[in-house]
Length: 427
Ligand SMILES: [Zn+2]
Image (cartoon, rainbow, N blue to C red; front, side):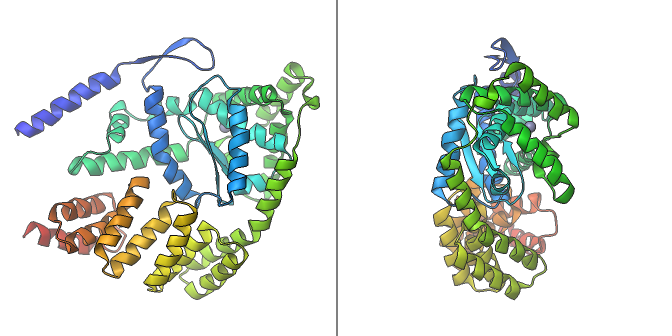
């Protein structure tokens, strides 16, 4: 009872501190404003979601030259923006046509959208638009409006133990899903467009690049799904607004930079790996229908063309399902060597080690995975089994309890987890 009261007291104090507004200078208007979420908290929340964003987009694109190129161009544009935070730029493997940002600095651009671009100014326009959202604090405004401050504070203190842990994990899962599917309002899109055009112009690129991309999205929309449109609504008025803005405020923009030899070089790298990624996408369909032999053929072919983290990860998954645990581990290791922020291969490796009764090795791998993405129920189940096997009763109970609490009830191991918990608790 006493302990409970103390906990309540601490939460009470925390909420008083966290509910008080923070005075900050609005990066866009330059005026002093009061916000609930401080820049530091905004950055911390954004950083917590980075590995989930990478995992859900099938890992970082493996080519260092492509990653460095996007970083350089992104930072060049970021230098022209008023908000001084540490911006990060990532190219992810997803074939979707998408680009998005997270609170406080991370910006993601998919392999799919890059392949639809023909000029550097188009890429500059898209990056500048995402920088516009970060500069106008659109993510922070979404967080403040959608979630209570107590939820946001609870996910920042995720190191909580016991029953609070599962609820903090679930809150973080909720916030990351919210951020990864975040839809901005029309006004926010217009604001990001206006800022994006300005940043592009100030960096020396023709802002019509963004318009080119809008027109491409419009024409692509009929044939294939454009992810970018589902999170950044694009009505015709938006296109007209940008056209007008450029004509009135930046009439000399046609003289600015359109393209570079670096951009063309990056495009040729992306094109040379496309076939391999296409094979993996095909293989994923066969994995879904449990046709593992067909999937394996496609993945072998993909790896022959280009051994990406994604191809190795999905081959590891097929090997895991075929109970070839050693092969699963060696494929997962190849993926991890290429991309150590990718959660999926770590999870696969940890499960394969568990199946081989390599308990301590499995704990080591799964704890690493947990430090990246901590809302995966399978991870907690296998971790619980590992801890039980080495006789760490406390950690076994904690992991299995979390597994059950965050499971959707359809994982298949729930009954076994309950049985293990009864044994561990001695009844
Ligand atoms: Zn947008």
